[in-house]
Image (cartoon, rainbow, N blue to C red; front, side, top):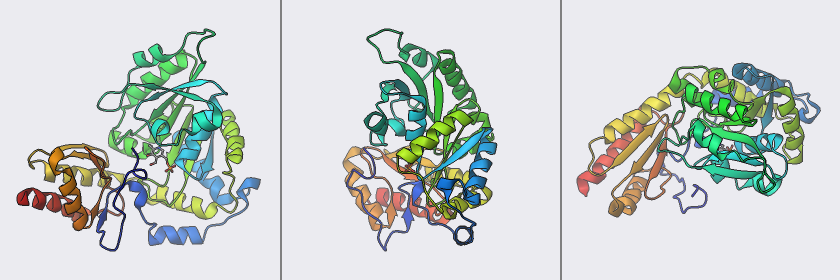
Length: 350
Ligand SMILES: Cc1ncc(COP(=O)(O)O)c(C=O)c1O
C-alpha cells in the first residue's frame, strides 16, 4: 500500500508536525533565492549551465563519468532499468523495493522489463546466494536476466558497503548490470560514515534524489558510465522528461548539496530521539532506521491512536498495522518532542 492509495489524513491549518515523508519539506529562503537567481538555458539543447553543473557535481561525488537530471526518482529509475534491459529481459529486485512496489509497474508496462522479486529479511536484505539462485539458466523457457536492482537506504535501513559490494560483484560475475536506487543514498552514507562513492562504485547506475532528505522541491540525478547515461538520455526524452530552463530547479539541488548533506545526521538523531522517548510505552513496537520510524501499536488501539495524533496536529503515514514516521528538514527537536508527548498522553489516557 502506498500513502496515496490509502485513506490518509491530509494536512490542514492544524498540522504542526508532518512526518508522512521527507518529501514534504518546503524550500528554505536560501534555496528559493538560489532558484530565482539561477543562470539557465534550454536543457534539451544541453545549454543550461546550472543543470550541467549539478550533473557534473553529482557524477564527481559518486565517482561516475556522467549525470543526467530527471524530474523524479521514478522517472530516473525507469530510464535506468530500461537502459539495462531490453524488451522481455528480466531484472532481479528485492520484494520490498520502491521500484517494484511504488512505481506503477512502469518497467514492465512501458518497457517490457520483467521484475523477479527476491524475498528479503527484516532489514529488507537478500544475499549474494539469493542473487545466484535467481539468475535464469540460458534456456528457451526463461527470460534473459540482465540486471540486479538494489535500493539504499531501503525503508530507512542501511545496507553496508560490504553487503552492496558482495551483491554487486555476484551480479557482475553472473553477467548482470547493477542499478542502485539511491533516493536516500546520502542518508545511508551519512549513517555508515562513508562518502556516497563508497557505494556508487559498485553499481553501474545510481539514482540520487534531491527531493527527499536533501529538501529540494524536485529532482533526481542518474549517474553512471557514459554509455548507460547516453541510453538513459534518449529514454528520458521518450518519457517526456526533457525539460527546458530547468536550471531553476537544478539550483535547488546544488544548494541542497552545499547546505543539507551533513545535517542529515540531525534527522537520524531526531528519529532516534523519538524512538527513545517512546521506548517505555506499553505494547508499542518501535523500529528506528536512519530518518524513519516504524511504529506498531496494539491492534485494538490503532484507530484511536491515529485520531489522537491527528487531533494533536501530527501526521504520519498511518498504515495498519505499522505506521511510518519520517524526520526531515522541517522537524526540529521541539516537534520531535511533540510526537513523543502526544504518544505518551495517549497511553496515559488509555
Ligand atoms: C526509495 C525511493 N525510490 C524512489 C522514489 C521515487 O521518487 P519520486 O517520488 O521522486 O518519483 C521514492 C519516493 O519516495 C523512494 O522512496
